Image 1 (cartoon, rainbow, N blue to C red):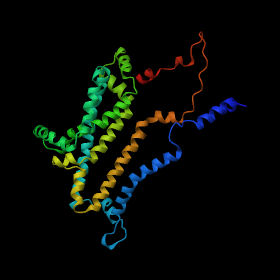
Image 2: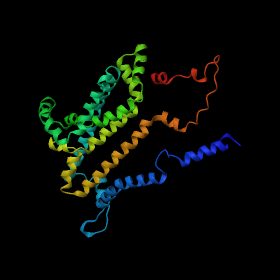
Image 3: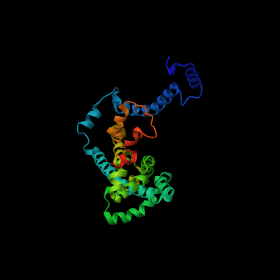
Image 4: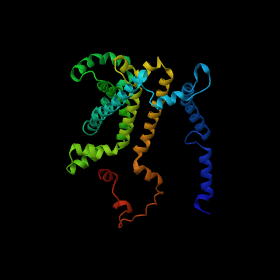
Length: 315
């Protein structure tokens, strides 16, 4: 009889099973997943069914989908192409502005000015509490100056979008940054002669890669779905173009909205695939580690020769 089958162990196992469960039961989990899935799937299914309707003749048809994929976005549908191009440009510039301004600031505050952590958090989370219409009222005078300096091109809207994505980007990066001992890594790197650019780009950024990817993809999703600021500042993006086209042909507008939703879903899947990296996949497939051998005062521990986590991060 193995140690796992001893009477004492079986008694403990029964107590664990009949005692407090660590989480909801399997049935409860399925109910929650099903309810959340229906909340998302029912509107999407209704949109798909709407695009397949045959109009007054009844029935269903794929002609509208074929027109979209067959180069039918011309003439009165051309604003969609313009809006999609502008939104993709805005997404790229917004991600660049967000990463260039936010990441060095967060790392610097965490390493050199930890007392400013709460202040930075408050500033970054503040835009989520302000309605978009209020932001536009405050940004209108600023954009009169921006227009004189950089012109009235659509890419300048990325400055405003960089503000509204701050709460989401800050949370994504902060969650990853708290899991890394940036202070110790930075001091170790500086003791070896590394400068601040080396610390930032070769030590900190690789360790918070997943948080950066999550922040970037969430920023892209926010930019693709933003309407209020672009409409009130008289800029054309995907959402304003969809509103214009929907007045003439609501079917095409819904099809483009579904494709944009699919694009955002693919981006979110890419977060897990790219952000995980080959290291996480190896960890998932690696066999369980063997128990550590007992050590004696005269013999060094088995894991003493292995590099520490901080040394591995520095490498």
